Length: 189
Image 1: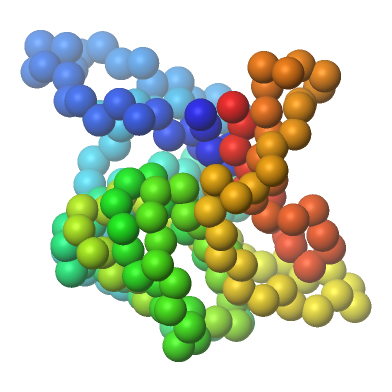
Image 2 (image 1 turned 120 degrees about the vertical axis):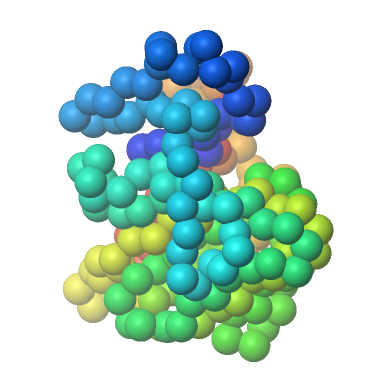
């Protein structure tokens, strides 16, 4: 199962042995980058103190967004104050966390996701070990279309559809295909 966006995250977290570090499966092209997790060093973000953060995609790689893989321990978390400019998409890969969007609390578990508009502030706190994807992007409004409200859901509740008449290929649209959303996040199985 893959979360569809320009960067794919593979669920292999094993580090390679030191004698294997001279070779790499990394491949960077004009429309994609495949970088194994062991090749991505941990970073830090000011609004995610003490979190282990890996930058998966950024403008430096040609993307018009930033995508992070974030590992949290119990009690750790992050936050963002509404700035009217940047929207956030969170997807919980593992663990349980509490997400507060403008005072509304949501319990998130593996498969949960949230799309947070640039007009909303949020805070996420881990109840135990949590691994999540975070995508930050400048919101691009459509003329005469109102800003979307926060969207919170779980992949298990999203109907899948057969893709290209292949019953072995199932597509789940996490974000509705509607004008107010300027982003698509899908799961392709």
